[in-house]
Image (cartoon, rainbow, N blue to C red; front, side):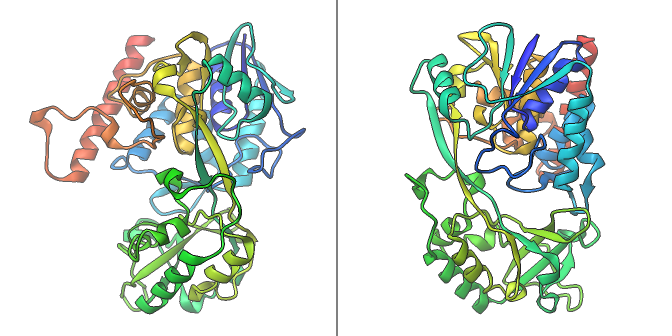
Length: 426
């Protein structure tokens, strides 16, 4: 019998994998009795920051990780593929439909019992997977800290981007296209001239922030950097990150722009778009004022403003093994962002590994991610998304200069290694 605490992406994946192995599972979820500040729905596996699971090509490490998960019968990937919306070379989903699909699958599984309630402590008997996410607090957070030896909880800050009503976007100052032509004009692109961008960046850098207790720019995790923090880092930081114009040309003129904000469809109907990479913790009035400087958003209707959350993760390299189990008591496993994996798809991978109780080869993306979070040499420990730098390098005779070819070869090796591992384990 396994108890899984938390019905987010990692918890649902862990519960599914345990049940698919024939093991009875009790999935404890605090919603609908209580929600965290980031949650709005009562369904499971709620996506709170973005609707994108990132790149879906094998030249991309996130694409490799998703392909591995598909081959391992991932519930989350199956539901994501069923509810995907156009997003160029990325896998993006209709958030509501995706969560409903995961919730339906979990609730209908004969070996999974869903228990509504807030867990106050780690189960004292049986197997346990703690997948309560980076907003874990209260009695359970205290119990986890005590279980891990006290004083090991670390923290970073995370932010989500605003949502825009599609009908309020001024298409006279925008165009539809996917970067490098990958996709069928899946993004609405909002170009800016140099003068427009510099004004926007100047106003963004001095805009008023919402109070977040203890916030410091130096403690923001790079993977979820708020746009106002990027603006303060220099005039070109945004142009090389959230507002990167490379690979985008206006179809009507064939010209590029100095900077471009991309809007990605947030639901299948295409009535809601999110501001890609625009996580923020500005006050709501300041978000309206500053983001409306962008020409295409001068009359934008903001359906949801960006918000900031204080996120916590444990010091996994000292405390967890490559199966995401606690070194002091492997009966208890952890999954999701609380382990220091950063990102939706990485959380799924940790949930799958924790549910299967398996250590995957380092040559695979799943195994490389687990090896990273369990490597004591990672000091100080910083959360990470999947990237090819986590995988062992290719043998010297397979090394090539071309970056994309190198990534393809790493992916090919990973998938071959995974297939051989599964055959040997069956």
